[in-house]
Image: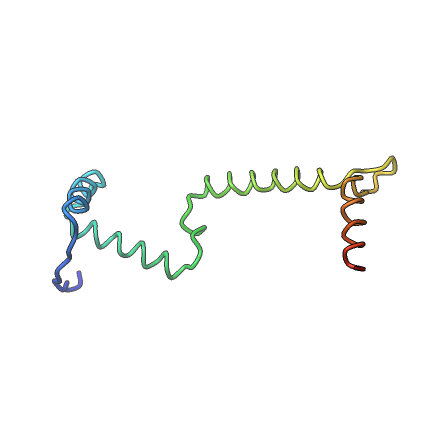
Length: 106
């Protein structure tokens, strides 16, 4: 175990009360151990520069699936398929592109 250095930590009374309650709920053997784990976690989070690394796999998988479904829904709204299966713009998108072309010429 490495030698620890003591330093003052100033917290509001409310934050201190929460800290005292949560370290016991967490099962940490001391407030110091709890704070040290919290600091380690936050430093790793900052180093990773990607919060996705800290999401549980099940949540990340769920979010990826939902985003995939949303992407499919959005793309299907913008395209329709003709009888040969070729994608075509829906009429509203054709008008929007035509109108955008008019604005480009002006």
